[in-house]
Amino acid sequence: MMKRIGNELSVIFVDFRNSFLTKRVLVLFVLHFFVTHIFLASVRRFAVNVHHPVSAYGFLFLFYDMYYLLLFMFVCIYYFSNTPFLNYHQIYRIIRTGKLRWGIHQIVNIIISSVVLMGSVFVSACIVLFPQLTWENDWGKVLYTLSLTNMAEEYNIMVDFTYEMISRYTPLQLLGLTLGIGILLISFLGNMMFAVSLFFSRTAALSIASLEAAFIIVEANMLMFSKLIYFAPFTWMRLSRIWDLVGQSKPTPSIGDAARYLAVGNLVCIVLILWKVKDINYSKHIKKE
Amino acid sequence: MEEYIKVEHLKKSFKDNEVLADVSISCRRGAIYGVTGYNGCGKSVFFKCLCGLEKEDGGKIVIGGKEKKPGELLSSVGIIIEEPAFLGNASGLKNLAYLYQIRNRKDNQYLSRIMEKVGLAPCSKKPVKKYSLGMRQRLAIAQAIMEEPDILILDEPMNGLDKDGVREMRELFLKIRESGKTLLMASHNREDIEALCDEVYEMEKGRLCRVSKSI
Image (tube, rainbow over all chains, first blue to last red; front, side):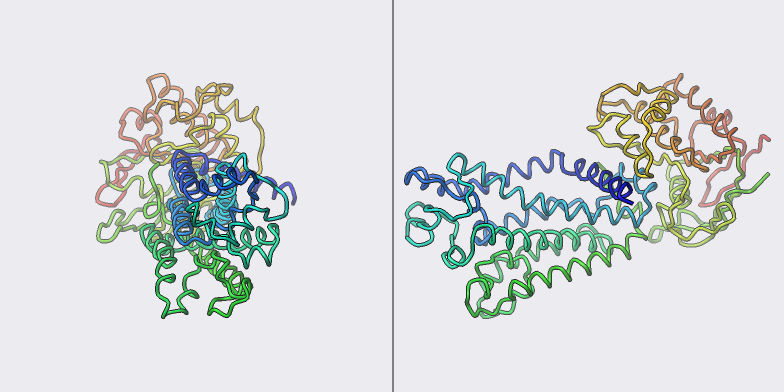
């Protein structure tokens, strides 16, 4: 049994490596790195001036900026834009795995990809902040100062180092919360795009995903429709707006509810994928390489 | 002789375009069946329906006495359909090992022999993206035959091969036929069809018509 699971994981890993190590993804990560650089370079400049290192966990606050979040979500959408992942070399694979097993492999691939995409934010933030980095489980003087004073304005720092989050959570706690919600959210995005492309088309999957991403801006600007946040799951990555995390009474889902909704969303998408993947049609879904 | 594949009144349309109107064919073990026809007549679509990559609209496909559900993939089939595509950055042997592993098998020595059989050097580290079309075609043939499937579906298997390559592959396919496998082959090349096929069909207006029987 263990040998079988090991073999399955090995097959999935080769597939993941093949989809990941492409020029398309490389270009995407370079662009993503530059976006992260725009947001964090001023933080490093501040750290250099005050002669104190920045906590490596500072990258968690990047997601609280709606523009960064929007760009990150478009990175994720672009990453999954080759859904339903059926290209010519997959034909030799699908004929051996069968359609259902192939579908399960793609779902696992989506989950691995979401971990890697979250990891990519951390890596690019570390590169930008290097060598002004510290790895202790403490927010450090730089982030405390930026959250409590107006130094962020003076240095044109775009990241909102929310004091409520810094005072309530240790870096590791916030890392756990952010990774948990982030992985659930990106998996949901990938699974939703996979399901929509199976039922309709790749164009429909891209349109729906882009619309959801655009809701990050729409929701932030339409204050009279406060309930809109329930229909904009991408905004749940802005943990500083989740009411039970910051002790406010805003009409937002609690962190537990957000995780539950995303888990259910993933589950629904996975059921739909497994139901539909048995009918995947070569002519409709094949993508030339 | 035992009838192994039986296709009856197979239909397939894409929107208003009826590609397969009424395709019927019976194939036995240990024989090669040739399908000819002009470009776009539906040969590839027929093969895709047969192996399960495409879901047929109507008709019946029976394999070894068991009716196949529409769109269900065949369990023991080797295919070459359209252009051969592989993991571009990996070597030929690594590509084969990856595909072989999907069915829980590992045997690089055996795969090396298969590569030699199709005229490729197994120890070459050259990535497949640097292969010529002929080399990729040879690799495609290797992946189709390596698990010794009961049925081989070959859409233009000699594409891109040089003269020696064509001769070697003909010999290989005839050997596979002798081992009791069923081969279906689409080709525009009359010489290949004449040299290899036991029965030849022409796809015309969505129907298969037998044009010759040499045995």
